[in-house]
Length: 436
DNA sequence: ATCTGCGGGTTGG
DNA sequence: CCAACCCGCAGAT
Image (cartoon, rainbow, N blue to C red; front, side):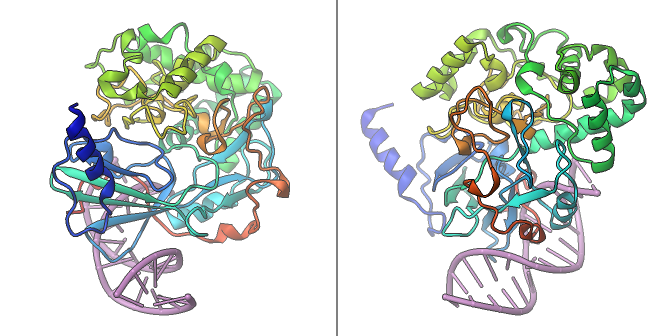
C-alpha cells in the first residue's frame, strides 16, 4: 500500500531465483495461487496456501528428479489430442490431460479418441528450449516460492479436476448404462456409452455451454440451497446434452445414477457465503484486478455466455470431483480468466468466484462440480494457450487452435512416437511440504 | 489404479 | 557439474 514499500517489495518479489541461497523473507504480500502459470513466472505464495502446498498446477506436470530435496522440480507433459484432429460439435477439439504416471500414460495412449475413436496423440511440451516447461517449488520460511521456466507451446489440457470429473462421469454412465440404453438413446448417446465402456476415456464431448448452463444467474446460487441436487441434474444434463443436444433432461436419469455417490464428493462449501457482489470484487481478493479480465467477463456476460458459468461456476456443484483448488482468478494477464472455465470447475480454473471464499485460501478440500470441459472445449476468447480444452468454438473462430493435420501449430512430428515417452509423476497435490 | 514425491542411476553437453 | 530422464519404491487417494 505505501508506494515506497511497494517498490521495494516489488523488487524483492522479482529479483530472486529459486536457486538462490536465500530467498526474500520480507515479503509483504503473497500472490494468489496461479492455476496456469506460464512464461517464466515467479510467485511467492503463503506457506498456508493449500494449493501451493500441494504444488498444484492445471498443466499436466510430472515430478522430475533434480537431485535437490529442497527444490521440487516438475516438467510439463503437454497435452493429449485426437490423432485425427477431429472436432466435436461446433468445432471443439479434444485436449485430454496426459496421465502423470508413465504407466497410466502409456495405457492412456492406447485408448481411442472419445469422440471419433481415432488414435490419441500426445503433444509434448517443448516450451523451454525444446524441452518441457519446468516448474520449481521451494518452501522457505513462511512462503512457498514458485518459478516457471519456459512458455507452454501447446493448448491447455483438461485440468485434473476435469479429468477426475470425466472419470466420475464415466463411472456414472457405466452404472447407469443399463438404464441409459433405454433413455433417449439417441445415436450419439449410444455411441458414447459404447466408447465409455470400451475405452475408458471420456465419454462424451458435450457441449459445455449448452449443457452447462447454470440455471439462472449464478450469483445467487452459489451456494444455494440444494445445489447438490441441482448440480447433479446439471451434471447429468451434460452428458445427455452431449448426446441429444438437449439440455436438461437428464434429470430423469439422475435417479439412476446413485446420487449418493456422486454427491459424496461434492459438498458445497457450505461455510462460505458469497454474495453476488463478490464476483466483482476485485479488491477483496485481487481477483479482478486485471481490468481485462473484468472486461472479458463483462463481455461474456453480455453475450449471454454465462460468464459465470464459464468463469466462475456458479453453483454447480458438480459432484464429480473434488475440486479443490482455489485458484485465484486472475491469472496471467494474458489469460482471460475464463479460459476454460467453462466446464471446469469454476473454481479451479479461474478462481473467480464466489464460491471461493478466500482466494488464496484453501478451498481445497471442497469438492465440486465438474468439469467436463476439458475435454472439449471451447471457450471463445482465449488464446490458444489459454484454452485448455478444446478450444474452438465454431462461432468464435478466432483463436482456435486446431490441430489440424500437419499444418497445425503443433506439429505432431512425433506422431505417435510421443506416445512412448513417459515418465511419471508430477503435478500437483499432496505433498504437503516436503520441501523444506 | 493413480497420483505424488523421493532418490539412485544414466547420458549428453 | 548440470539438466533431462528412466526406473522403482513408498505413501496416499
